[in-house]
Image (cartoon, rainbow, N blue to C red):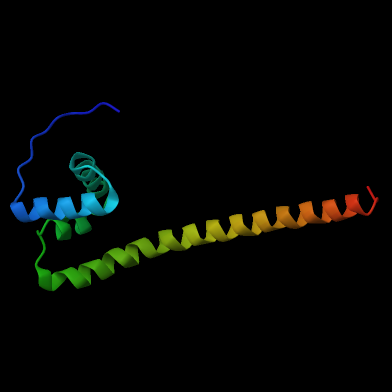
Length: 108
């Protein structure tokens, strides 16, 4: 992946936080900051505003509730897909087991 060099100045406190995360996860500061930027870019705009401190702390909880309610239908769809995939996998296992038992008993 092509890389671009960007100089970023952060506070000493932020640098210490990065060091702590880096040490705990074995990830370099540059990679850590890159991943955080990519993650933030894919978040809901409201969540971005909260993370960036652009929302009054008093309003954060109610906005987070709104974000959760927006994501709930997507999560339900994903759970449904996962449930269907598990059911399909279980059916394949059962069919394979039945076939194996039939083959072992000499009936083909």
